[in-house]
Length: 306
Image 1: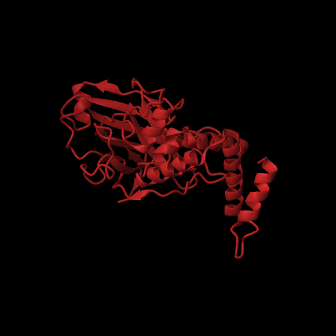
Image 2 (image 1 turned 90 degrees about the vertical axis):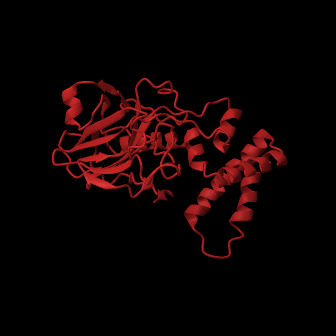
Image 3 (image 1 turned 45 degrees about the vertical axis):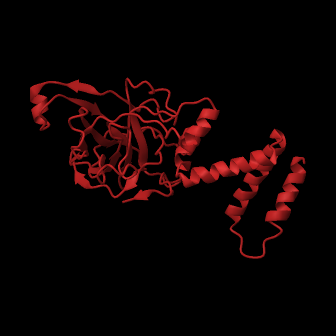
C-alpha cells in the first residue's frame, strides 16, 4: 500500500467507526502513530511473525516493568530532554542547572528534613566510602533560595535501589532536604556505583540485538523545586567512572559531571561527625524562574510510592 491508501484505511477503521464522544487529542495521536507504523511495515516488509514477536516483546517488557528502562536505553528520555531544551530556548529561558533524565526508579514520600540528612541506613558503612554531597540552591542571578525542595536518590554499593530491591530498608539512600536559610543542603550518604540492566531482562535482550551494553556510570538523581521556579529534574555522574561518557541511558551532559574529592584531614572528618576519611562532592543547583508562556516542567507519569 502507498501512504494515501494507508491513511484512507486507518481513517475508515478508526475515525469513521466512531459512535460516541471522541477524545480528539487521543484520536490524533493514535492515527498518526498507526500511519507511521503501517508505513514502516510496508517499508521494512515486516512479516506477520516479526510483528507478533514485536508485540510479544512489548508485552514481556511491560510484565517485567522494564518499559521505563527501555525508554532510557533507546534514547527516548534523552530526546525529550533535548526537545525541552529547545522549548526553553524559544521561550527565552536560559541558564540554570542542565536537565537530564529522571529514569524509572524514583519513589515518592522520602523522609524530609531541613538543611541536612543522612541518607543511608548504616548497613554498608564498613563496605564503601562515606560521601558528603553539599551545595547551594540559587536562582540564575545568584540569589539564595531558601526552603527549596531537594529530592535525592541513588543506588547502593551493588547498584541496586531501595523499594525495588527488597533487601534494603525503606527509603534507604532516598531523602528530601529543604534548603536552609543560606540555601544550603548537605547529604551524608555512601558512594554510589553504576549499574547494568538486568542481564536476563527484556531491555538487555534488545540491547544485545543492537550490539550495545546496558551500563550506567555512578550517579545521583535529583528533583529540585521551589515556588515560582521551574522544577528541575537532573542528576550528576561521577568523574572517573568507566562509563561516564558511555552511559547507555545518555544522561551525561556538560555541567553535570561531579568530582568526588578524597578528604583525609582530621579536622574536616570531625566537622562532619565522621570517624574516617570520606569522599566529598559539591553540587550547586541553579533554578530558573517560572515563565507563564512556557510549558510546565512537571511531567505526569506513573511513579512508585511507598
